[in-house]
Length: 457
Ligand SMILES: [Zn+2]
Image (cartoon, rainbow, N blue to C red; front, side, top):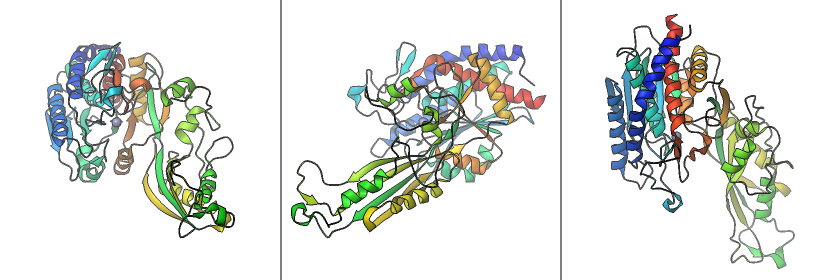
């Protein structure tokens, strides 16, 4: 059953009333440079944790506790019970942020929240302190609308080192009872465009490989020896070149991906965000979305070879490259890594010997979208944004999601949030659009109410 118009209107009003406190909480969080990278003060991460605890308490969660994680930053857990028999919803965000990077590239102080043209600027304003305050605002609005009890049991888990390491995965198996839910909302993504409600339903995985070619005991004069001598760098270049075809599509035997059937990613926006230089083409075939979300992409991300400056006329005896593979969602990254290794070794020319070292892998995800939680969330999105929602993929990966899926195979996982493409996450001048933030709170609050209405009916 759908939520009554009257209940939806009450929640809408309560979200609007909660927004000033939501924005104030976000500003407070942005002021804390809680960076979990080595070399940054741990005291600030602890301060961000404590502020998160306080914000969740202020929102009305009767249970808020800190979960210590060995070898990582503390996570924060909160819970507010709904009526007996109501579904349980787990809301995820992370309170740690990326470092500011080169501060001279920021138009305002990275850790001083600054509002310009409807956006709040500051490191973490979008990624992912917006997620923390969305969840807080949602509970506040639901409690006000339902006389002190939310329509579902609402649980919140806020991670403290997502940008560095992501240690939460390690405690999921031992905290199953605490984290178990019928639906899990990961508010660490955003809409395709401002005002266009979007679920992220697929994330690419990744796999890394290092390939090393050693052909001579040392460099030799190319005038005297060049010709028969196997040039290690040339062998490596030819091997790496086999990873792309003439159109620029990645070719790894046994790894294909699929066509994305959701809306296409707008090319002009992509060009702008990726900083593609005017006049340069985009490469590959198929839709933008297929190329970005559901096809494999191999990139050479590092290469060891003599520097151009000081280069001498020599046959190069040793060369090494690191290849990073974005794995189509739904493919096992270890299988993809093995396919990449086999492909590379098969393309080393002239019978030259090369050595492969396998690096890390991360699983991609394709979530099921045909359950009751998605149905409820689509209705909520329609009400919050006044238009139908769309599904996109994401080029990056969130390894935690794979662990959640393993532990809670029956839980529906929904990814939506307030990070639109202009949010410039991880870059200078990160910001969140305050209207998007408002609508994200509304969408999440309505989702929880819609899900409860379904079950009660
Ligand atoms: Zn994030």
